[in-house]
Image (cartoon, rainbow, N blue to C red; front, top):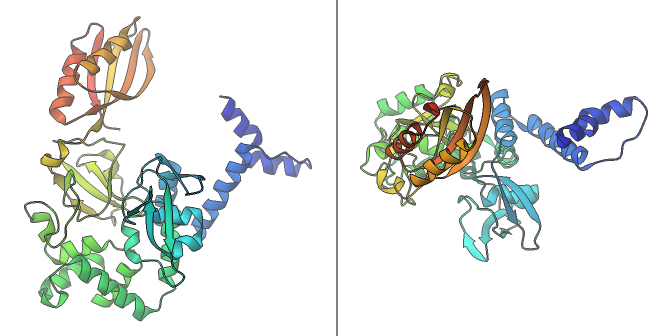
Amino acid sequence: TDFMDQMANQGVAAHWFYKINGSEMVDSSAQIHAQRWIKSLLELQQSASNSFEFIESVKTDFFPEEIYVFTPEGKIYELPNGATPVDFAYAVHSDIGQHCIGARVDHHPFPLNRPLSSGQSVEILTSPVSQPNAIWLDSVVTSRARSKIRQYLKGLKLEECQLLGKRLLRNAMGATRIENIPSDTIDRVLKEFGKANLNELYVDIALGNLFTVIVANKLLNNEAMNSPTGKNPHATLPPSSINGTGGLNYVFANCCHPIPGDSIVAHVNPGKGLVIHTSNCANLKTSNPNEQFLPVSWDMNNACNEVFEAGLRIEMVNIQGMIGEISNAVSVCGANISQISSETKEGKVYILNLVVTVRDRLHLANIIRKIKALNNINRVVRRKG
């Protein structure tokens, strides 16, 4: 494409090549964009505590689903889908993020841990005495915000980290006190996380290396997971289509597109919070064995009010009007096509890859039956990758 040609000729690598050959190059939009990306990548590499954190952060920023929000003055900022006011504050300036105390969205008070939507106007409230809060790590999605918060937390003294971690854990456990937890339960949880004592556990919580809600659920013997609603009985949480998240932000994985009725599990992703996968997702088999997972389930009462995405792989004979017939079949079933791509298999046989909006597995089955009933359709399967 023209953009690919421009990037090849004027991208960051070409810039070095031209410099070596002694000629100056006029900065283009592609060159400026590449330089900014390389600079942010270097900042991330320098602040990451280990290689896994660096890789996860790059993945988060490399394949974002963007939203566009505005400052009160009308300046546009591009952020990953799920970004919160804290992510926005750090995107504007590190100092604003470090001293953030609240936010106003479209001139109304807005929680710092709630995801933003495209088109919103965001105003960040600051205080010179305010400092980053470790609990922000449970909701921020941008690597810049996470690295800056971690950088501040690592500068705290050991005693401060212990007190902060203990306070965060106490808040997550609600009315239950750590002193009332049986010692064998505490020993089991410490062994599971590889900690010698509670103070080490508190420090890791304060530094954001462990999700507070996960530690609390394990100490409570998954009380929140086993409650009828699947939520922490000591906290009031907004309606959710997933039981067992403990109030953490979550997104649905694009690799397997889980929908109501699928067996699911939550993968604890350092860059995104919780990512909901199907239990048999191939990507989970290649995950780092030290990564954490949460058992979760569908809340069908709330899920029925949402729309989900599912992938379809259609093998068909490519004749005039076939794509229109497939689109009509999807529409008749009360669904929409959100993505479409094709590839040639052999001769006139084509592979059509669709992403369709569905309510649940039954709705998807109806769509598949409707497409299979069309002429010149060889095969229709659900695509999970």
